[in-house]
Amino acid sequence: MDDREITPMQQDERGQSPITQEEWPASRKDSFFGRVWKYRFHYVIVLPALLLLILFKAVPFMMTVVTSFQDFKVLRGIAHSHWVGWSNYRQMFTAPEFHQVLANTLIMKLIYTGFCGIAALVLALSLSMVAGGKLRSALATLFLIPYFIPAVIFANMVVIVVSSRTSPIGIHSVPLAHSNLFRGLYVCIECMKTIGIPVLIAIGAIGAKHAAGASDPRRHHVSFFRRNVVPAMLAVSAFMLMQLSTLLSNQFELMYQLINPIVYQTGDTLENMQFRSAFMLMDIKASNPVAVFQFIVQFGCTLLAYYILRACFARHLFTSHNGSAAAIQASGSGKSAVGTVVSLLYALAVVAMLYLLFVYPFTIRHEGPGLSSLVSGSRFVLYLVVYLAASAVFMLMTLTLSFPLTVKDLPGRSLYKWFLLAVMSVGSISFMAYYELHQFRLTNTVFALFVSGFFSILPVFILKSIYNARYAALRPRYERRGETYMFFRVYVPAVWKPLLALGAMQFTMLWNSMYLPLIYMSKPDLMPPISSFLMAAQQTAGDGKALAYGPAAMLQFGALIALPSLLVLLFMRRWLTPEVLTGQVRNL
Image 1 (cartoon, rainbow, N blue to C red):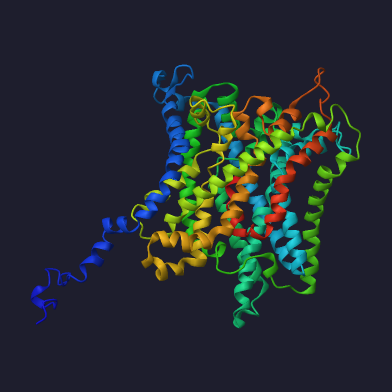
Image 2 (image 1 turned 60 degrees about the horizontal axis):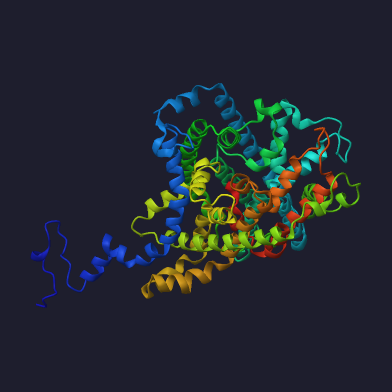
Protein backbone atom coordinates (compact mmCIF):
# COMPACT_ATOMS: atom_id res chain seq x y z
CA MET A 1 0.00 0.00 0.00
CA ASP A 2 1.26 3.51 -0.85
CA ASP A 3 2.20 5.41 2.31
CA ARG A 4 0.00 8.33 1.20
CA GLU A 5 -3.10 6.16 0.98
CA ILE A 6 -5.72 6.70 3.66
CA THR A 7 -7.38 3.65 5.16
CA PRO A 8 -10.52 3.67 7.30
CA MET A 9 -8.34 3.03 10.37
CA GLN A 10 -6.47 6.28 9.67
CA GLN A 11 -9.61 8.42 9.84
CA ASP A 12 -10.01 10.70 12.84
CA GLU A 13 -12.75 10.48 15.43
CA ARG A 14 -15.12 12.59 13.29
CA GLY A 15 -14.82 10.11 10.40
CA GLN A 16 -12.63 12.51 8.40
CA SER A 17 -9.30 11.53 6.90
CA PRO A 18 -6.17 13.26 8.14
CA ILE A 19 -4.32 15.61 5.87
CA THR A 20 -1.64 14.11 3.69
CA GLN A 21 1.76 15.70 3.25
CA GLU A 22 0.82 16.88 -0.25
CA GLU A 23 -2.34 18.53 1.05
CA TRP A 24 -0.71 20.17 4.07
CA PRO A 25 0.66 23.30 2.37
CA ALA A 26 -2.77 24.13 0.93
CA SER A 27 -4.33 23.65 4.35
CA ARG A 28 -1.80 25.94 5.97
CA LYS A 29 -2.45 28.52 3.26
CA ASP A 30 -6.17 28.48 4.07
CA SER A 31 -5.62 28.97 7.81
CA PHE A 32 -5.97 32.40 9.41
CA PHE A 33 -2.24 33.08 9.60
CA GLY A 34 -1.75 31.48 6.20
CA ARG A 35 -4.22 33.93 4.69
CA VAL A 36 -2.59 36.84 6.55
CA TRP A 37 0.72 35.88 4.95
CA LYS A 38 -0.87 35.32 1.55
CA TYR A 39 -2.48 38.79 1.59
CA ARG A 40 0.39 40.58 3.35
CA PHE A 41 0.65 43.04 0.45
CA HIS A 42 -2.82 44.39 1.32
CA TYR A 43 -1.80 45.19 4.90
CA VAL A 44 1.38 46.91 3.76
CA ILE A 45 -0.16 48.98 0.99
CA VAL A 46 -3.04 50.24 3.14
CA LEU A 47 -0.84 51.29 6.05
CA PRO A 48 0.10 54.87 4.97
CA ALA A 49 -3.51 55.83 4.20
CA LEU A 50 -4.72 54.15 7.38
CA LEU A 51 -2.22 56.09 9.48
CA LEU A 52 -3.39 59.36 7.90
CA LEU A 53 -7.01 58.47 8.66
CA ILE A 54 -6.15 57.65 12.26
CA LEU A 55 -4.09 60.82 12.75
CA PHE A 56 -6.41 63.34 11.10
CA LYS A 57 -9.83 61.71 11.51
CA ALA A 58 -9.91 59.13 14.31
CA VAL A 59 -7.72 61.05 16.78
CA PRO A 60 -9.73 64.32 16.52
CA PHE A 61 -12.95 62.36 16.99
CA MET A 62 -11.57 60.59 20.07
CA MET A 63 -10.59 64.02 21.38
CA THR A 64 -14.17 65.12 20.74
CA VAL A 65 -15.48 62.17 22.76
CA VAL A 66 -13.12 62.84 25.68
CA THR A 67 -13.76 66.59 25.81
CA SER A 68 -17.52 66.03 25.65
CA PHE A 69 -17.15 64.83 29.25
CA GLN A 70 -15.03 67.84 30.26
CA ASP A 71 -15.43 71.53 30.91
CA PHE A 72 -12.93 71.97 28.11
CA LYS A 73 -10.92 75.18 27.98
CA VAL A 74 -8.60 75.79 25.04
CA LEU A 75 -5.95 77.44 27.20
CA ARG A 76 -5.93 74.51 29.63
CA GLY A 77 -5.92 71.81 27.01
CA ILE A 78 -7.37 68.32 27.31
CA ALA A 79 -5.01 67.15 30.06
CA HIS A 80 -5.85 69.99 32.46
CA SER A 81 -9.55 70.63 31.75
CA HIS A 82 -11.95 69.60 34.51
CA TRP A 83 -13.88 66.33 34.19
CA VAL A 84 -17.66 66.87 34.50
CA GLY A 85 -18.97 63.42 33.51
CA TRP A 86 -22.40 63.36 31.90
CA SER A 87 -23.19 66.96 32.82
CA ASN A 88 -22.72 68.29 29.27
CA TYR A 89 -25.03 65.61 27.86
CA ARG A 90 -27.70 66.32 30.46
CA GLN A 91 -27.58 70.00 29.57
CA MET A 92 -27.81 69.16 25.87
CA PHE A 93 -30.82 66.84 26.18
CA THR A 94 -32.68 69.18 28.57
CA ALA A 95 -32.10 72.33 26.51
CA PRO A 96 -35.27 73.41 24.63
CA GLU A 97 -33.07 74.80 21.86
CA PHE A 98 -31.60 71.35 21.18
CA HIS A 99 -35.04 69.76 20.80
CA GLN A 100 -36.14 72.46 18.37
CA VAL A 101 -32.94 72.28 16.32
CA LEU A 102 -33.09 68.46 16.22
CA ALA A 103 -36.69 68.63 15.01
CA ASN A 104 -35.77 71.21 12.35
CA THR A 105 -32.89 69.04 11.13
CA LEU A 106 -35.00 65.90 10.88
CA ILE A 107 -37.95 67.64 9.24
CA MET A 108 -35.86 69.36 6.58
CA LYS A 109 -33.81 66.24 5.90
CA LEU A 110 -36.86 64.03 5.48
CA ILE A 111 -38.68 66.60 3.34
CA TYR A 112 -35.61 67.05 1.14
CA THR A 113 -35.09 63.30 0.78
CA GLY A 114 -38.70 62.66 -0.17
CA PHE A 115 -39.17 65.70 -2.41
CA CYS A 116 -35.82 65.34 -4.18
CA GLY A 117 -36.34 61.60 -4.64
CA ILE A 118 -39.78 62.02 -6.23
CA ALA A 119 -38.65 64.93 -8.41
CA ALA A 120 -35.55 62.98 -9.50
CA LEU A 121 -37.71 59.99 -10.45
CA VAL A 122 -39.99 62.17 -12.58
CA LEU A 123 -37.06 63.92 -14.27
CA ALA A 124 -35.17 60.67 -14.87
CA LEU A 125 -38.18 58.99 -16.47
CA SER A 126 -38.82 62.10 -18.57
CA LEU A 127 -35.20 62.19 -19.69
CA SER A 128 -35.29 58.49 -20.55
CA MET A 129 -38.21 59.17 -22.91
CA VAL A 130 -36.39 61.88 -24.88
CA ALA A 131 -35.75 60.75 -28.45
CA GLY A 132 -32.16 60.96 -29.64
CA GLY A 133 -29.16 59.87 -27.63
CA LYS A 134 -27.21 63.10 -28.23
CA LEU A 135 -30.03 65.34 -26.99
CA ARG A 136 -30.53 63.07 -23.99
CA SER A 137 -26.82 63.19 -23.13
CA ALA A 138 -26.72 66.98 -23.55
CA LEU A 139 -29.69 67.41 -21.22
CA ALA A 140 -28.12 65.04 -18.69
CA THR A 141 -24.97 67.19 -18.65
CA LEU A 142 -27.07 70.33 -18.27
CA PHE A 143 -28.85 68.79 -15.27
CA LEU A 144 -25.49 68.37 -13.51
CA ILE A 145 -24.40 72.00 -13.85
CA PRO A 146 -26.06 73.35 -10.66
CA TYR A 147 -24.19 70.78 -8.56
CA PHE A 148 -20.86 72.04 -9.92
CA ILE A 149 -21.59 75.66 -8.98
CA PRO A 150 -20.19 76.37 -5.48
CA ALA A 151 -22.90 76.42 -2.81
CA VAL A 152 -21.83 79.88 -1.60
CA ILE A 153 -22.18 81.32 -5.10
CA PHE A 154 -25.45 79.47 -5.69
CA ALA A 155 -26.84 80.88 -2.43
CA ASN A 156 -25.67 84.38 -3.35
CA MET A 157 -27.49 84.09 -6.67
CA VAL A 158 -30.65 83.13 -4.77
CA VAL A 159 -30.23 86.09 -2.40
CA ILE A 160 -29.80 88.47 -5.35
CA VAL A 161 -32.93 87.10 -7.05
CA VAL A 162 -35.18 87.24 -3.96
CA SER A 163 -33.83 90.52 -2.53
CA SER A 164 -36.17 93.49 -2.95
CA ARG A 165 -33.18 95.77 -3.73
CA THR A 166 -31.39 93.63 -6.32
CA SER A 167 -34.02 91.27 -7.74
CA PRO A 168 -34.05 91.20 -11.56
CA ILE A 169 -37.63 89.86 -11.51
CA GLY A 170 -39.19 92.55 -9.31
CA ILE A 171 -39.60 90.80 -5.94
CA HIS A 172 -40.62 93.35 -3.30
CA SER A 173 -40.40 91.21 -0.16
CA VAL A 174 -37.73 89.00 1.42
CA PRO A 175 -39.20 85.46 1.53
CA LEU A 176 -36.11 83.99 3.21
CA ALA A 177 -36.80 86.23 6.22
CA HIS A 178 -40.19 84.58 6.89
CA SER A 179 -39.88 81.67 9.31
CA ASN A 180 -43.02 79.98 7.99
CA LEU A 181 -41.61 79.97 4.43
CA PHE A 182 -37.96 79.22 5.10
CA ARG A 183 -38.11 75.41 5.31
CA GLY A 184 -39.97 75.00 2.06
CA LEU A 185 -37.80 77.52 0.23
CA TYR A 186 -34.60 75.97 1.52
CA VAL A 187 -35.64 72.46 0.46
CA CYS A 188 -36.55 73.72 -3.03
CA ILE A 189 -33.22 75.56 -3.34
CA GLU A 190 -31.21 72.54 -2.18
CA CYS A 191 -33.18 70.25 -4.48
CA MET A 192 -32.61 72.58 -7.44
CA LYS A 193 -28.87 72.50 -6.81
CA THR A 194 -28.40 68.77 -6.21
CA ILE A 195 -31.12 66.95 -8.14
CA GLY A 196 -28.83 66.25 -11.09
CA ILE A 197 -26.97 63.59 -9.07
CA PRO A 198 -29.97 61.29 -8.35
CA VAL A 199 -31.32 61.90 -11.86
CA LEU A 200 -28.06 60.67 -13.41
CA ILE A 201 -27.91 57.71 -11.02
CA ALA A 202 -31.43 56.71 -12.10
CA ILE A 203 -30.57 57.26 -15.77
CA GLY A 204 -27.58 54.97 -15.30
CA ALA A 205 -29.82 52.22 -13.92
CA ILE A 206 -32.23 52.61 -16.84
CA GLY A 207 -29.35 52.62 -19.34
CA ALA A 208 -27.86 49.46 -17.83
CA LYS A 209 -31.25 47.74 -18.09
CA HIS A 210 -31.54 48.72 -21.76
CA ALA A 211 -27.95 47.66 -22.49
CA ALA A 212 -28.58 44.26 -20.91
CA GLY A 213 -31.75 43.86 -22.97
CA ALA A 214 -30.00 44.77 -26.22
CA SER A 215 -27.89 41.62 -26.00
CA ASP A 216 -30.85 39.39 -25.13
CA PRO A 217 -33.56 39.09 -27.84
CA ARG A 218 -36.05 37.82 -25.23
CA ARG A 219 -36.02 41.26 -23.57
CA HIS A 220 -36.75 43.35 -26.64
CA HIS A 221 -40.47 43.52 -25.90
CA VAL A 222 -40.26 44.19 -22.16
CA SER A 223 -42.70 46.89 -21.06
CA PHE A 224 -41.74 50.51 -20.35
CA PHE A 225 -42.58 49.94 -16.69
CA ARG A 226 -40.08 47.10 -16.31
CA ARG A 227 -37.35 48.62 -18.47
CA ASN A 228 -37.57 52.22 -17.23
CA VAL A 229 -39.75 52.69 -14.16
CA VAL A 230 -38.51 49.76 -12.06
CA PRO A 231 -34.75 50.44 -12.41
CA ALA A 232 -35.33 54.17 -11.88
CA MET A 233 -37.35 53.51 -8.71
CA LEU A 234 -34.64 51.17 -7.40
CA ALA A 235 -31.92 53.75 -8.07
CA VAL A 236 -33.89 56.59 -6.47
CA SER A 237 -34.69 54.38 -3.48
CA ALA A 238 -30.97 53.72 -3.08
CA PHE A 239 -30.31 57.46 -3.24
CA MET A 240 -32.93 58.12 -0.57
CA LEU A 241 -31.50 55.38 1.63
CA MET A 242 -28.00 56.87 1.32
CA GLN A 243 -29.43 60.26 2.24
CA LEU A 244 -30.92 58.80 5.42
CA SER A 245 -27.44 57.59 6.39
CA THR A 246 -26.69 61.31 6.93
CA LEU A 247 -29.92 61.84 8.83
CA LEU A 248 -28.62 64.62 11.08
CA SER A 249 -26.62 66.49 8.42
CA ASN A 250 -27.65 69.16 5.96
CA GLN A 251 -25.73 71.01 3.28
CA PHE A 252 -24.02 73.35 5.73
CA GLU A 253 -22.46 75.70 3.17
CA LEU A 254 -25.77 76.41 1.46
CA MET A 255 -27.55 76.84 4.79
CA TYR A 256 -24.79 79.09 6.16
CA GLN A 257 -25.46 81.67 3.46
CA LEU A 258 -29.25 81.49 3.48
CA ILE A 259 -30.16 81.35 7.17
CA ASN A 260 -30.48 84.35 9.48
CA PRO A 261 -31.45 84.69 13.17
CA ILE A 262 -35.01 85.68 12.25
CA VAL A 263 -35.75 82.14 10.99
CA TYR A 264 -33.78 80.12 13.58
CA GLN A 265 -37.04 78.87 15.07
CA THR A 266 -37.82 76.82 11.95
CA GLY A 267 -34.53 76.77 10.04
CA ASP A 268 -31.69 76.22 12.50
CA THR A 269 -29.96 72.83 12.24
CA LEU A 270 -27.57 70.76 14.34
CA GLU A 271 -24.56 71.62 12.19
CA ASN A 272 -25.34 75.34 12.36
CA MET A 273 -25.69 75.10 16.13
CA GLN A 274 -22.40 73.18 16.39
CA PHE A 275 -20.60 75.76 14.28
CA ARG A 276 -21.93 78.68 16.31
CA SER A 277 -21.11 77.01 19.62
CA ALA A 278 -17.60 75.91 18.63
CA PHE A 279 -16.26 78.63 16.36
CA MET A 280 -18.27 81.74 17.24
CA LEU A 281 -19.06 81.34 20.95
CA MET A 282 -16.11 79.03 21.79
CA ASP A 283 -18.51 76.97 23.90
CA ILE A 284 -16.88 73.58 23.29
CA LYS A 285 -18.77 71.83 26.08
CA ALA A 286 -21.99 72.59 24.17
CA SER A 287 -20.65 71.67 20.73
CA ASN A 288 -18.86 68.37 21.33
CA PRO A 289 -21.76 66.42 22.89
CA VAL A 290 -23.82 67.32 19.83
CA ALA A 291 -21.02 66.00 17.58
CA VAL A 292 -20.90 62.70 19.50
CA PHE A 293 -24.69 62.36 19.43
CA GLN A 294 -24.69 63.05 15.68
CA PHE A 295 -22.01 60.40 15.13
CA ILE A 296 -23.85 57.70 17.12
CA VAL A 297 -27.09 58.25 15.20
CA GLN A 298 -25.43 58.49 11.80
CA PHE A 299 -23.13 55.52 12.37
CA GLY A 300 -26.17 53.37 13.14
CA CYS A 301 -27.97 54.73 10.07
CA THR A 302 -24.86 54.21 7.93
CA LEU A 303 -24.49 50.57 8.96
CA LEU A 304 -28.18 49.92 8.31
CA ALA A 305 -28.06 51.68 4.93
CA TYR A 306 -24.85 49.90 3.91
CA TYR A 307 -26.15 46.39 4.53
CA ILE A 308 -29.52 47.12 2.90
CA LEU A 309 -27.81 48.67 -0.12
CA ARG A 310 -25.41 45.75 -0.44
CA ALA A 311 -28.21 43.19 -0.22
CA CYS A 312 -30.90 44.88 -2.31
CA PHE A 313 -29.53 47.65 -4.51
CA ALA A 314 -25.82 47.17 -5.29
CA ARG A 315 -26.42 44.97 -8.34
CA HIS A 316 -28.66 47.67 -9.83
CA LEU A 317 -26.22 50.54 -9.18
CA PHE A 318 -23.01 48.72 -10.17
CA THR A 319 -23.36 46.55 -13.27
CA SER A 320 -21.14 45.24 -16.04
CA HIS A 321 -23.20 47.10 -18.65
CA ASN A 322 -22.85 50.65 -19.93
CA GLY A 323 -25.34 52.75 -17.98
CA SER A 324 -25.05 56.00 -19.94
CA ALA A 325 -27.96 58.07 -21.19
CA ALA A 326 -27.00 57.23 -24.78
CA ALA A 327 -27.60 53.52 -24.14
CA ILE A 328 -31.33 54.07 -23.58
CA GLN A 329 -33.56 53.06 -26.47
CA ALA A 330 -36.15 55.56 -27.68
CA SER A 331 -39.76 55.37 -26.50
CA GLY A 332 -42.86 55.92 -28.59
CA SER A 333 -43.54 59.35 -30.10
CA GLY A 334 -46.19 60.23 -27.50
CA LYS A 335 -43.99 59.39 -24.54
CA SER A 336 -41.05 61.09 -26.23
CA ALA A 337 -42.98 64.36 -26.55
CA VAL A 338 -44.02 64.33 -22.89
CA GLY A 339 -40.52 63.47 -21.73
CA THR A 340 -38.97 66.20 -23.87
CA VAL A 341 -41.34 68.87 -22.54
CA VAL A 342 -40.75 67.97 -18.88
CA SER A 343 -36.98 67.72 -19.37
CA LEU A 344 -36.85 71.06 -21.17
CA LEU A 345 -38.70 72.78 -18.32
CA TYR A 346 -35.92 71.95 -15.89
CA ALA A 347 -33.30 72.62 -18.56
CA LEU A 348 -34.73 76.12 -19.02
CA ALA A 349 -34.39 76.74 -15.29
CA VAL A 350 -30.71 75.74 -15.50
CA VAL A 351 -30.19 77.95 -18.56
CA ALA A 352 -31.76 80.87 -16.67
CA MET A 353 -29.32 80.20 -13.83
CA LEU A 354 -26.38 80.24 -16.25
CA TYR A 355 -27.68 83.48 -17.77
CA LEU A 356 -27.84 85.05 -14.31
CA LEU A 357 -24.26 84.04 -13.55
CA PHE A 358 -22.47 84.50 -16.89
CA VAL A 359 -24.48 87.08 -18.87
CA TYR A 360 -26.66 89.21 -16.58
CA PRO A 361 -23.79 90.78 -14.54
CA PHE A 362 -22.32 92.23 -17.75
CA THR A 363 -25.62 93.94 -18.66
CA ILE A 364 -26.33 95.86 -15.43
CA ARG A 365 -24.83 98.97 -13.85
CA HIS A 366 -21.89 98.52 -11.47
CA GLU A 367 -22.29 99.55 -7.83
CA GLY A 368 -19.28 99.89 -5.55
CA PRO A 369 -15.82 98.47 -6.31
CA GLY A 370 -15.32 96.44 -9.47
CA LEU A 371 -14.12 92.91 -10.16
CA SER A 372 -10.43 93.88 -10.18
CA SER A 373 -10.53 94.62 -6.43
CA LEU A 374 -11.71 91.07 -5.72
CA VAL A 375 -9.54 88.91 -7.97
CA SER A 376 -6.07 87.76 -6.97
CA GLY A 377 -4.45 85.84 -9.81
CA SER A 378 -1.64 84.48 -7.64
CA ARG A 379 -4.04 82.98 -5.06
CA PHE A 380 -6.22 81.62 -7.85
CA VAL A 381 -3.25 79.70 -9.28
CA LEU A 382 -1.94 78.74 -5.82
CA TYR A 383 -5.16 77.01 -4.80
CA LEU A 384 -5.57 75.33 -8.16
CA VAL A 385 -2.18 73.71 -7.52
CA VAL A 386 -2.87 72.96 -3.83
CA TYR A 387 -6.24 71.33 -4.49
CA LEU A 388 -4.93 69.37 -7.48
CA ALA A 389 -2.11 68.05 -5.30
CA ALA A 390 -4.55 67.18 -2.49
CA SER A 391 -6.77 65.38 -5.02
CA ALA A 392 -3.77 63.36 -6.22
CA VAL A 393 -3.09 62.21 -2.65
CA PHE A 394 -6.81 61.46 -2.27
CA MET A 395 -6.68 59.23 -5.36
CA LEU A 396 -3.69 57.30 -4.01
CA MET A 397 -5.47 56.84 -0.67
CA THR A 398 -8.70 55.75 -2.36
CA LEU A 399 -6.82 53.28 -4.54
CA THR A 400 -4.94 51.67 -1.65
CA LEU A 401 -7.85 51.72 0.80
CA SER A 402 -10.23 50.10 -1.70
CA PHE A 403 -7.98 47.24 -2.84
CA PRO A 404 -8.27 45.15 0.38
CA LEU A 405 -12.07 45.33 0.10
CA THR A 406 -11.91 43.34 -3.15
CA VAL A 407 -10.70 40.22 -1.27
CA LYS A 408 -13.62 38.50 0.43
CA ASP A 409 -11.56 36.16 2.62
CA LEU A 410 -9.07 38.79 3.81
CA PRO A 411 -8.52 38.36 7.58
CA GLY A 412 -9.81 41.43 9.41
CA ARG A 413 -11.81 42.66 6.41
CA SER A 414 -15.03 43.18 8.39
CA LEU A 415 -13.27 45.12 11.14
CA TYR A 416 -11.51 47.25 8.52
CA LYS A 417 -14.79 47.91 6.74
CA TRP A 418 -16.48 48.95 9.99
CA PHE A 419 -13.61 51.33 10.71
CA LEU A 420 -14.06 53.00 7.31
CA LEU A 421 -17.82 53.27 7.84
CA ALA A 422 -17.22 54.79 11.28
CA VAL A 423 -14.83 57.40 9.84
CA MET A 424 -17.40 58.14 7.14
CA SER A 425 -20.04 58.78 9.82
CA VAL A 426 -18.07 61.47 11.66
CA GLY A 427 -19.76 64.84 11.15
CA SER A 428 -18.13 67.58 9.10
CA ILE A 429 -18.24 70.21 11.88
CA SER A 430 -15.32 69.40 14.18
CA PHE A 431 -13.63 71.84 16.54
CA MET A 432 -11.10 69.21 17.62
CA ALA A 433 -9.92 68.75 14.02
CA TYR A 434 -9.16 72.48 14.03
CA TYR A 435 -7.60 72.20 17.49
CA GLU A 436 -5.28 69.40 16.37
CA LEU A 437 -3.99 71.34 13.37
CA HIS A 438 -3.67 74.44 15.55
CA GLN A 439 -1.50 72.44 17.96
CA PHE A 440 0.67 71.46 14.97
CA ARG A 441 0.81 75.20 14.05
CA LEU A 442 -0.73 74.49 10.66
CA THR A 443 -3.72 76.85 10.84
CA ASN A 444 -3.45 79.92 8.62
CA THR A 445 -1.31 77.93 6.21
CA VAL A 446 -2.20 76.31 2.91
CA PHE A 447 -0.96 73.03 4.36
CA ALA A 448 -4.08 72.81 6.55
CA LEU A 449 -6.29 72.92 3.45
CA PHE A 450 -3.95 70.57 1.60
CA VAL A 451 -4.11 67.89 4.31
CA SER A 452 -7.86 68.30 4.83
CA GLY A 453 -8.39 67.57 1.15
CA PHE A 454 -7.10 64.00 1.41
CA PHE A 455 -10.19 62.47 2.95
CA SER A 456 -13.43 61.14 1.53
CA ILE A 457 -14.45 57.59 2.39
CA LEU A 458 -17.49 56.82 0.23
CA PRO A 459 -15.37 56.80 -2.98
CA VAL A 460 -13.40 53.91 -1.46
CA PHE A 461 -16.55 51.76 -1.48
CA ILE A 462 -17.55 53.10 -4.90
CA LEU A 463 -14.23 52.11 -6.50
CA LYS A 464 -14.37 48.67 -4.89
CA SER A 465 -17.94 48.15 -6.12
CA ILE A 466 -17.10 49.20 -9.69
CA TYR A 467 -14.22 46.72 -9.79
CA ASN A 468 -16.21 43.86 -8.26
CA ALA A 469 -19.12 44.38 -10.66
CA ARG A 470 -16.95 44.31 -13.79
CA TYR A 471 -13.68 42.58 -13.04
CA ALA A 472 -14.09 40.30 -10.01
CA ALA A 473 -13.99 37.26 -12.32
CA LEU A 474 -10.35 38.06 -13.09
CA ARG A 475 -9.13 37.20 -9.57
CA PRO A 476 -9.21 33.36 -9.90
CA ARG A 477 -7.30 33.67 -13.16
CA TYR A 478 -4.45 35.82 -11.84
CA GLU A 479 -4.28 35.44 -8.06
CA ARG A 480 -1.65 32.67 -8.28
CA ARG A 481 0.75 35.34 -9.55
CA GLY A 482 0.50 37.13 -6.22
CA GLU A 483 -1.27 40.16 -4.82
CA THR A 484 1.42 42.58 -6.04
CA TYR A 485 0.71 41.44 -9.60
CA MET A 486 -3.04 41.68 -8.96
CA PHE A 487 -2.70 45.27 -7.78
CA PHE A 488 -0.37 46.70 -10.42
CA ARG A 489 -1.32 44.59 -13.44
CA VAL A 490 -5.04 43.95 -12.86
CA TYR A 491 -6.59 46.33 -10.32
CA VAL A 492 -4.94 49.62 -11.34
CA PRO A 493 -5.54 49.14 -15.11
CA ALA A 494 -9.16 48.20 -14.37
CA VAL A 495 -10.06 51.20 -12.19
CA TRP A 496 -7.86 54.08 -13.35
CA LYS A 497 -10.66 55.81 -15.28
CA PRO A 498 -13.24 55.86 -12.44
CA LEU A 499 -10.40 56.72 -10.03
CA LEU A 500 -9.46 59.74 -12.13
CA ALA A 501 -13.12 60.77 -12.26
CA LEU A 502 -13.41 60.44 -8.47
CA GLY A 503 -10.29 62.60 -8.18
CA ALA A 504 -11.89 65.22 -10.42
CA MET A 505 -14.97 65.24 -8.18
CA GLN A 506 -12.73 65.61 -5.11
CA PHE A 507 -10.99 68.60 -6.71
CA THR A 508 -14.39 70.12 -7.47
CA MET A 509 -15.51 69.63 -3.88
CA LEU A 510 -12.33 71.25 -2.51
CA TRP A 511 -12.38 74.16 -4.94
CA ASN A 512 -16.05 74.86 -4.22
CA SER A 513 -15.87 74.41 -0.44
CA MET A 514 -15.85 77.41 1.87
CA TYR A 515 -16.09 75.49 5.18
CA LEU A 516 -12.47 74.31 5.41
CA PRO A 517 -10.94 77.74 4.72
CA LEU A 518 -13.58 79.31 6.96
CA ILE A 519 -12.23 77.50 10.02
CA TYR A 520 -8.55 77.11 9.11
CA MET A 521 -7.79 80.44 7.42
CA SER A 522 -8.23 83.91 8.93
CA LYS A 523 -5.62 85.87 6.96
CA PRO A 524 -7.29 87.60 3.98
CA ASP A 525 -4.09 87.58 1.94
CA LEU A 526 -3.95 83.76 2.14
CA MET A 527 -7.61 82.96 1.60
CA PRO A 528 -8.73 80.95 -1.44
CA PRO A 529 -11.03 82.66 -3.98
CA ILE A 530 -14.21 81.15 -2.50
CA SER A 531 -13.38 82.69 0.90
CA SER A 532 -12.77 86.08 -0.71
CA PHE A 533 -16.19 85.76 -2.32
CA LEU A 534 -17.78 84.93 1.04
CA MET A 535 -16.14 87.92 2.73
CA ALA A 536 -17.26 90.25 -0.07
CA ALA A 537 -20.82 88.94 0.16
CA GLN A 538 -20.91 89.69 3.88
CA GLN A 539 -19.41 93.18 3.70
CA THR A 540 -21.68 96.18 4.13
CA ALA A 541 -21.10 99.86 3.70
CA GLY A 542 -20.84 102.19 6.68
CA ASP A 543 -24.58 102.83 6.89
CA GLY A 544 -25.22 99.07 7.09
CA LYS A 545 -27.80 99.19 4.31
CA ALA A 546 -26.03 98.99 0.97
CA LEU A 547 -23.65 96.22 -0.03
CA ALA A 548 -20.04 97.30 -0.53
CA TYR A 549 -19.96 95.20 -3.71
CA GLY A 550 -22.88 95.37 -6.11
CA PRO A 551 -24.57 92.39 -7.80
CA ALA A 552 -22.57 92.89 -11.00
CA ALA A 553 -19.15 92.53 -9.36
CA MET A 554 -20.29 89.66 -7.13
CA LEU A 555 -21.81 87.67 -9.99
CA GLN A 556 -18.78 88.27 -12.22
CA PHE A 557 -16.49 87.08 -9.44
CA GLY A 558 -18.78 84.10 -8.85
CA ALA A 559 -18.66 83.19 -12.55
CA LEU A 560 -14.86 83.28 -12.49
CA ILE A 561 -14.70 81.03 -9.41
CA ALA A 562 -17.26 78.58 -10.82
CA LEU A 563 -15.35 78.23 -14.10
CA PRO A 564 -12.78 75.55 -13.03
CA SER A 565 -15.52 73.27 -11.66
CA LEU A 566 -17.64 73.66 -14.78
CA LEU A 567 -14.60 72.93 -16.96
CA VAL A 568 -14.08 69.73 -14.97
CA LEU A 569 -17.67 68.76 -15.78
CA LEU A 570 -17.26 69.47 -19.50
CA PHE A 571 -13.88 67.78 -19.97
CA MET A 572 -14.51 64.81 -17.67
CA ARG A 573 -18.18 64.23 -18.54
CA ARG A 574 -17.57 60.91 -20.31
CA TRP A 575 -15.91 59.50 -17.20
CA LEU A 576 -18.39 60.96 -14.71
CA THR A 577 -20.51 57.83 -14.82
CA PRO A 578 -23.54 57.23 -12.58
CA GLU A 579 -21.37 54.97 -10.40
CA VAL A 580 -18.85 57.78 -9.89
CA LEU A 581 -21.61 60.29 -9.15
CA THR A 582 -22.95 57.92 -6.49
CA GLY A 583 -19.82 58.83 -4.54
CA GLN A 584 -21.20 62.37 -4.11
CA VAL A 585 -24.50 61.40 -2.49
CA ARG A 586 -23.29 61.95 1.08
CA ASN A 587 -22.16 65.47 0.09
CA LEU A 588 -25.70 66.52 -0.86
